[in-house]
Image 1: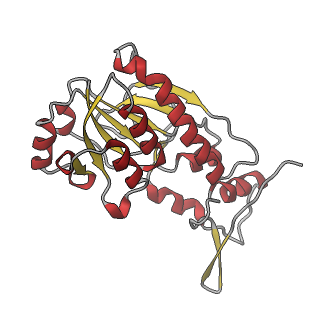
Image 2 (image 1 turned 30 degrees about the vertical axis):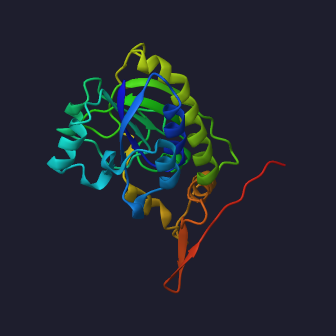
Length: 251
């Protein structure tokens, strides 16, 4: 099967190494983030060792020339892993066997971004899902999924690390059946709206010192946004932000 990969991050690098070692797939192209948005880019490129003519800039997928170059590779399937650009038509039509995405959430909960944060704050199921790609954002049919428990000592950082591990485990377990056509896509269950954009964390990051909070809710906000060295929750003191980080441990 001829595959084009859409990859970013450490999990993308692991998938690159895993698929490049298999005999049931031929990786004919790679779409990667531009350098300023790229994570684990060198590992991904090093694992695949594709010629520059087969490596594409993910920020330019709306250009017809890029679609034509990808079409010329005659791919069967597209595989997206932690890829932040939305795949749309006419690109999706280039893949007779469709495109699939590995998402670090237990869909249909937590479509979109910061899945580790919202699983803690909303107390919604956390996990990983392999799903087909349609015109929406993480709305395609489910091919496989696995839950990951949220521990009372978790922060956004520790949960994110375990979601990465869960995502790769799920991919390795699912790929042989996916490649052989034995995974049957299932529509996502209907739940209350659970989708988030990058900017949605702005609504929770400011801790109002004059506001009453339920203790659990305040702890969840601070721990969900604890992910050094990134900024997280904060309060204002004389016009300056004072950032908060939480360390949790069992007795």
